[in-house]
Image 1 (tube, rainbow, N blue to C red):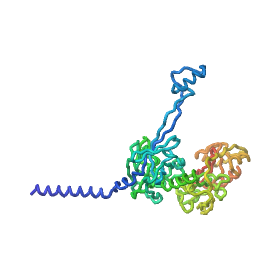
Image 2 (cartoon, rainbow, N blue to C red):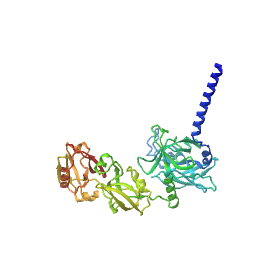
Image 3 (tube, one colour):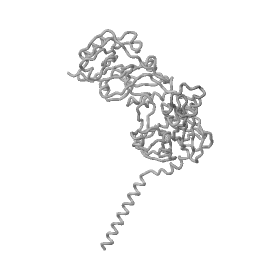
Image 4 (cartoon, helix red, strand yellow):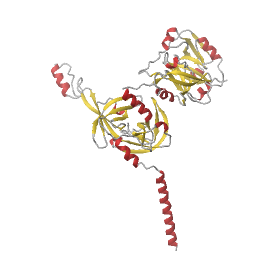
Length: 469
């Protein structure tokens, strides 16, 4: 009887374990139908680039005195001979996906950049030479064209509806292993990366490695919602963070490349910075938010639209600016010569400005640095300042301001001010002369955050500090 009871309990326990395992499996998505339907449109991309190698041969003597006929022999026959050189082929590997039945393919710009030859390999192992229709380094998107008809295509989704926590799946060629499938979840959306101003990246924990670049990121409906582009790594391999270009951004770029051959972006003509807690207090904001205008380009769209230094931009066409990095990609999506509504805070008051957005220039110009003239001192801040000459004001595109000639012991030294820094605003007031600077400095409040706009080596930024009792 005891044996039967033990067997019964063991049987029940086994049923519970199996039931728990079945329940856990039922809660996980089945990716098989997605992979089977989407894989035929995912391609492998390889490139070739001819690289000229140069350098002296370690065992060759100085042959400068030889007749030209002998020098020509050495230049063409000996690798590494100075003045000759040798060509080799540099190869890269990545992924891509077909977006139209007539052969348009999306991938990353860095996969095909500077390539002399681009080869697209289809799932059936056939290889086709691709033509680069166009590329946009700022978003890392490239559009290719291969010859064909009735080619398999991916289904495109909308990245704008994506939420953190959703399941996503990547198909690509990491380390050359074709059609490798990895899955994970969206860990964040709208992520801004250093030096990447025009892409609100999708952050995931999907395993992405070299060779995955340019491949598609799918949602559970089998729709492409991103292009795998970057990883965060200290080892060269996957470390749990990967970033994808939203498909909404990529398709807008690819359409411009296909129809116009180039990409046009909106441009506001400002230098901005993040709003921290002290700056928020200084500008009368309840919390740190928005993009603080540190510099307005002369003659640019912002200047023409009435935007001023010290304004905090809180929204663009109703879209909130939470972090300053949100502003560039929002402005960039607006077509040039169209009007935009900017919600701002100016001197503690909320206003709305209508600005006609310009076209982003290909290259920016740096603002010159300043010199000095008549000196005034402010012992309260611990700096000596000088007024700018008219020539210096023109070179800096300023109507006023003072330049620091000496930093003494005091608050200025503690907040890192240096000789040569130009102060244009103090406590939300424009500084047009050394006398104005001294007057405003004498009236600064105590134990409250005070803002100061400083130009250093042509770059403007706001800093904050507090004066103690």
